[in-house]
Length: 202
Image 1 (cartoon, helix red, strand yellow):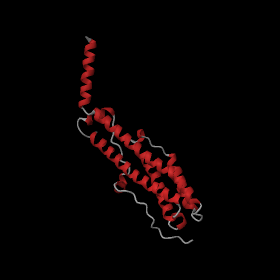
Image 2: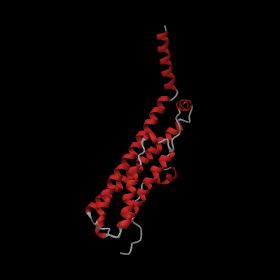
Image 3: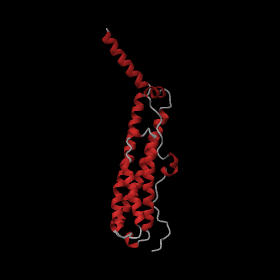
Image 4: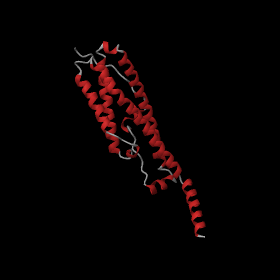
């Protein structure tokens, strides 16, 4: 009798959980993690391009050592910060990650702007190929970040709705911070690679 009661209780509990949004919360949680994995994948791709890019411009940019050092240091800082899907609930860690990625983006922009002063470099086939790869990677980063933002938005909306709200509170689920929320306008558009700094005197 007790065994039958236990089975009925398990079936009722399963039906109750499926009807209260538990499964939906699990699906959305996985979607957030998968979206973040894509963001990381594209940032890693960019980080792998940086040493090749620095090596390709090194012989040309004799007077621009500080720019090359900034790129190298920013790339090293990016490599020191690892942010996994399980860390996404920590706004401070997310901000440190974003700041490191932003510093690398800024140093790459300065490097690309300075490269305009070197016609021989711009005509170098390896440099042009790396620039194409970098531009494509920046576009992929923007798309991956948009998908992540959408996944977090769906998560945050769902855990505030009834009956998912109850399950979320019981299981301790919290809203997740948005990545790049203070730069939402930049996240929503494709990044530009600009070469508009004035030419330096050589």
